[in-house]
Image (cartoon, rainbow, N blue to C red; front, side, top):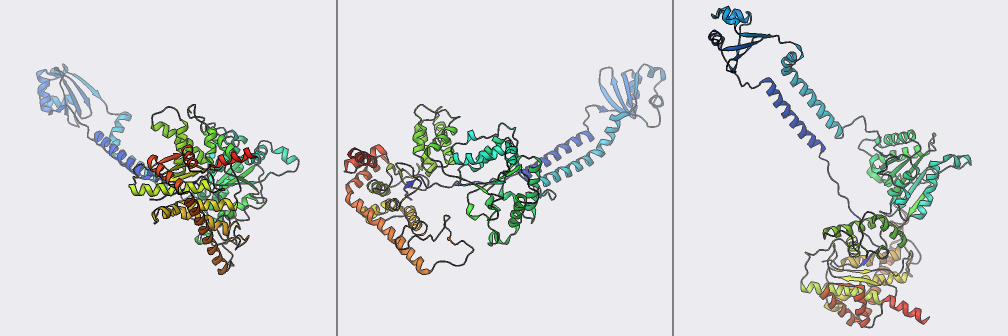
Length: 640
């Protein structure tokens, strides 16, 4: 059992599943089937089945003498006899003599033979030679075809020794209306789109810039959190400019053979220069653009060679003014300084997580092809999804449509989208995860402790929902949302967040005199937040305004430099983190002891209904003398 409180600023990464390609094994099966079919065909041609019986030449002579034969067809040695009763039989004559001489030798008189119709056909022409040569040619043709078929499949399976150095970029044609993306299809990112409009203007009308002596940036690097729309924005630039778009990932340059990545870079730029004006887009460029000389890559120099070739192509002796290189990465801090210096990737475009207005616009784009019910309010959905990226909002709308389709409804309702928010953040409901009576009681008090501490402490976000229904890895969750979006957070807000995180732990210990494994994720969140306050944001009076780690959690002096801080400093850091955690526990204990009746009321109601929405939750705490955050603000406004 794992409990968790939920702050919507913390999102989960989505995993990717890799699927193997059974192309080669399927081709082998096809080759075997073709072999069996051709073998059967060959046997049919070489050994044709006959439905006519064969008679001896002496029996034929008797039948002619008796006047039973209507006609004889002579084809070389083969004789086809048609009797007057329409029976057809076959026979063979002697090779050296004619049919008349053969029958005469068997006692057939010439006048009797004259009464029989005899037709002679000479076996010649294409059909004759084909039927004679086919039994010999067919096996040879099949063997040659089989060898060609297998060599073609082996070549396609990855043994193209002469095509390693060719670029694997996917090209989007500007005239392809089905795959065309423009700025109208990208909501939010206003500042980023303004930056990129200059690139579009240059590709459409480069003369305006060149005449005044201006030189458009050669490289544009897009940075931002995963799912903020870096690739989509790059495609929109190509769609707006109406130029070819060469798209590939950084990992596609590197192969098992040394020099392949550099060769592919040369081939890629050669293709782009021929199609100029054009855009080259390298996704996840940090795969090959990491800082050189730091011992990365396990001693493999292939990445460095590939990076060196990119640097040469972007700032070589043959500059091409109509090829613009765009790149995207989630880790700009690990890129080589030579790659992002002026003259190469000298324009940096940052894509932030969308704010409320941007989220509403993104939701509106993803809702275009979905039949929405009259009660759907996208503005409310945007307010309840702070911290969501564009990809998360797409998933939200898609999950809402799936929930509606699962219940056989033709329209998507507001209720579907509300449920989809929780599904995207935490995962689906685990209805089969049944708790015992004791575990349900522990879960209820745990989540009630989170919610009550958040409602009482002045700098914590207000509670919107409390539930003890298991979702994903969480046995229950408390959903809290800020009153207004903010880019900066204060020390007081972090301290209250830590106390709120520890509210479930304190409630379990206070009510049951014991603790379970439920608060494990809460303790992890509180510890990480306390460490960040001390080592990143300078929010400790003991340590002072010193940054011991960078934004990515690494040491601030980098991974290459050897010097660091003393053991004394790190001992103080550990002591300060422990102090912040203990202060949070004391703050939560004080709240829960003072409002124990409210804690019990919330927990008992959760045991009954399992989920409390904001309206019902506020009624419970108001009945116990606690005013919700919004009510307190309204009271202050009235007094002023």
